[in-house]
Image (spheres, rainbow, N blue to C red):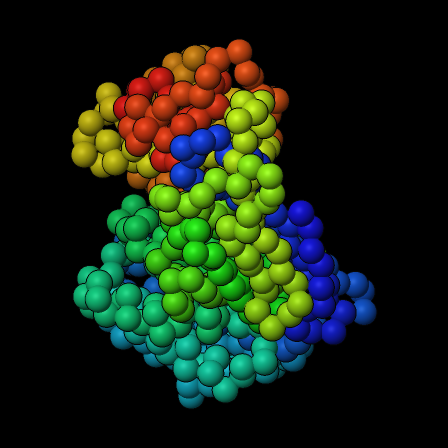
Length: 472
């Protein structure tokens, strides 16, 4: 089901497409749907102003080894050089507090030959000392962006350490205040930073996180992130999700291009929630996986579609509905939409990667090898070459199809974090399995949550657990 409409800026068309199988068997209690949200513009789409802030970790730990601060400064200079004339920008020094590297006063400079050169000189002579309090860096950045609400606002945060100079509550409070104000991409350099902290930052600020495995490639990464941000033409889109009296929204996850569970970022009443989607370019699509629990006692509707929920892009006429219809036709109820199938499989891959990381952190090398072997098997089945290449930094693949691997004992922590932060869907291929229904057997119940699934399902549509009963 595809709906189109006018976006909040002239020249940008927005669309929502709902992918689902609306047919349910008696006793089914969950409805999955994948939304494709698309923005399409043209060469004449007016570009709003752009504002860019670089947040550089200048704490004492950046001195060791000295290549970290050297590459950080080189990357910041590279990012500054690609800023077009007229772009608003600043560089922030991050330590146990935040201060300005350029310009000297807390404001945004206007990019020109003179200001770009001055900013690069300021970055080159910045001093390295102090602790780490990333919430203060983000709070200063929010203040820099505040006078420019009509611009597309983007930040890049680079750190090598844990957030030890403020409490987690302080960091989360800063992130809550910054959510919807700007988009932030984050990078961890070295071996001592926390992937959980960077994941939380980019989840709330709708960016992407990654590990710097090869430090000499950081400058090119910064250039790419700045150029990517400069393609944005919509400062923010907001998705409104409403449910009928027959359903409750269980979760909403962004599943492409980056994977985040955004359920706790919903705002509003239980039957009508709003979610910030961040800034968008004029040629971009993102996918969101929604799951609705059907309220027990709802009378099945065999002869007509029943509306479970509706979604709309706030401030536009773009909206779509999620439907349900009960059936006693096993072929209809066990057919799974290819989009939903893909992201259920993707969820299983994410779980396997995360479990390997947890085992590795606990010193359980056998458990890490087993979990990452399962991840290799799933990535091979899904045609996900990007994830496979990252996993190969951690394991020697003996048999991808069988999930047989041997842990590399010399694997660096930065390589482990590179896998844990990998954007699974962005790097994915397409599922190699058919979405055609298999009706020779009755539906099967999940061994973990007892949800009903199609007979050939490998992973539960409710909790993503293996239908074989294997522990995830």
